[in-house]
Length: 376
Image (cartoon, rainbow, N blue to C red; front, side, top):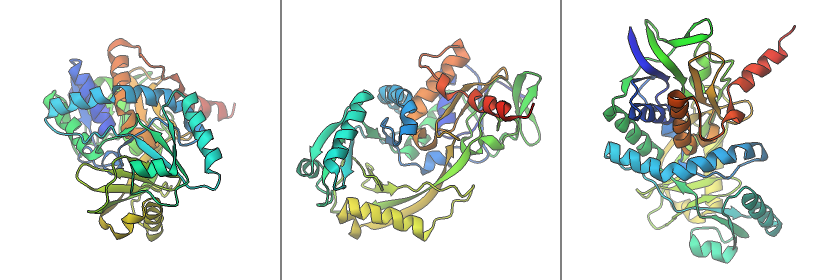
């Protein structure tokens, strides 16, 4: 029987980053994935690093997102040094484009919201916005510069984290996904794989949208897959420096010259089918935001599955089963929240305390709700 200090179910960016932090703290870590690590949501994302809330429901996430942004440069440096690989980090900010006839009022609202949340945001006229990003549409009415935001090449970052974790002593087990938690009474003793058990003092569930499929986990992590279709474009005569954002689309430039456009949010189960309607929506939005992309080459199309929780907020922290921690449900913010998630899990495992409040994201909020709904 394999035995570790910590067994982690899920080998994506978050699971691998948790493993890396724990290994660097001197713990023996085993990481178990249903396939090759790093090929699900971590591979499929765009890598936008923005703590700005996309809706009122996500305002609760801002403090955690700001804490993660604050340590991202340090996280990238550590990973790149430990792995010898580049993460494609681009701290160049985001430019939010406003097209509405009521752009002036909308601009005031956006600036006030950001400042109220302690986020830097600067109002831009249409002329100033296009001076910063000439590829923007002439139909632009106003813009918002969010200078402290960034992006990262999530595929490169994931591979760098995996390599750094291997060099730090993490043991990887591909095609060895967890089927159930190993529970005896009020204690989690590890994981059940297909034909064996894995013993661990601590067990971390970080299997993204597949977490709820692990027997015993669903009451704490009722996640479901949210499909996102994406397109990678290349336009040799078009230069975009920053992440460009509108209410319909985002464009994310890569260091290799590609421009990623995305993404849809679809609840269609675990399928990753690309659809004509989804791609049309992305391409139409991209060309509206930056008309020069009409002549760009389509280099790649793909779809990925984000882990979404019932309230769209992450599921982080210990459960009422001793030794069992959850780290999933990050929805559209998984890449952004990776450093803080890894740090908090490591702090809890090694010190049983955390330096950033994570109670709002406790797995117990779902277990408690389920118990409350149960008949007497």
